[in-house]
Image (cartoon, rainbow, N blue to C red; front, side, top):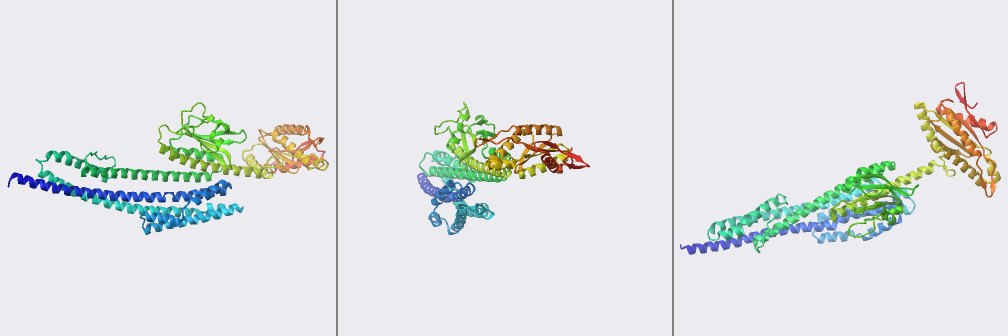
Length: 602
């Protein structure tokens, strides 16, 4: 057999093997296309179902906001969000057109069913709130059954996504196995071709086929082990090797994107769990100090690279005062008027730096080089506080945008909790204060007396009780009218409150009768303070409708523990001394004495 014949046969075999090898490479590439199609279909499903849970929670938050605050803006936002939702059949049709199976659609249909049930409950709660039955509205939206239905929606959506993940993973695994088989066959054929033409086509085999195949094989092996740091080699040749390299690059990019999405989803789930725990802790706060402690603990966890401060509005001074800070912020004053912040002026988040040029807030001082975020805390269209943040230098736009959403959610939760605490404190003050004089009322007196008596008996500390009764009070009402009597009561209450600004507590028991508790006062100190009060009441000069009301005097009964007996009988002892003072001619101070171990007015 001539050498030329052997060469021709080898050439023909090589051509045949090369064609076969190219075919197997194309088949492997086709398998990769199948995998990409499965991943693309999964991405399509994610896009179609991504907003389902968000829609449910947005509607829930708007409905709850309306029930809690009665703010009609929440109701308007709720109706707008609801009107934007598509019907169940419309959503199912889109998913069916995208290739979802009936089993998967059944899971999603169940989730949409619970979603519609939640919508009905929201409507019922809103209707109850509009009818004035806020208790029923809160029971519906904050009840255990509503929470369980929210969990059912999340569980059904999770089930639907799990079924999609299972199907996608199965398709990807099947495509990967097919690609591996075709690649193995291709490598065998390439090896035979290399043996035949080792001498004739050594340069071509080595430079154009063997080296790229070895490098691609290493990359594919590492990618199969989910080592996405493996970078496919660049191939400028328009042949099967180039197609394989391109397919591997696409596979790697898809893998990196899938890995990134999984990381973002895990991070988002972790952050939402953290915000949920924050909300629960805020709802359990009994005071503003508790709220400040919760914010100081959770704020650095939610935005670990965003230093910040929490400001609370001081109504007495009309100033924003820092309640706490975290991560050592460098800008913004500790205290400033609300007009010094554009976020408080406009009632919305203010970012003076970034892509949009804006005016920096005055409370930042001269430091304008740091990008800052001011988020107002509002309740009933009133600014009650503010969250201030400093953006980290060099952060990506996506990171800032994602963290900004969490900061808005944090501000909303803190604002609602702070508003609830202020409302509760206001209601408590209204229940414990006398509306006419502004002094604590009888209910507050009973609580304070019980506390001070217990402390005095436990520590043997002195405690003084002073009973005060305005002399001939009825003549003011009978002569000048009840408005004049109210003016006298307010004036006397003012004297008592002013005289005890630093030490002691003054109360109005009812009618023209007042009582003063002076913990830590000796009998001589209490007597001196009582004389001061008596002189200031005698010096009062009131005009009512152009007429002077005349002299105002009061009678005083004074008793002290332990001088006059047991602490729990202190009020009765002082009342007996007051009765004696009124009997002996009024406008005088009588100190109780002790007779035979029992407290009585001497």
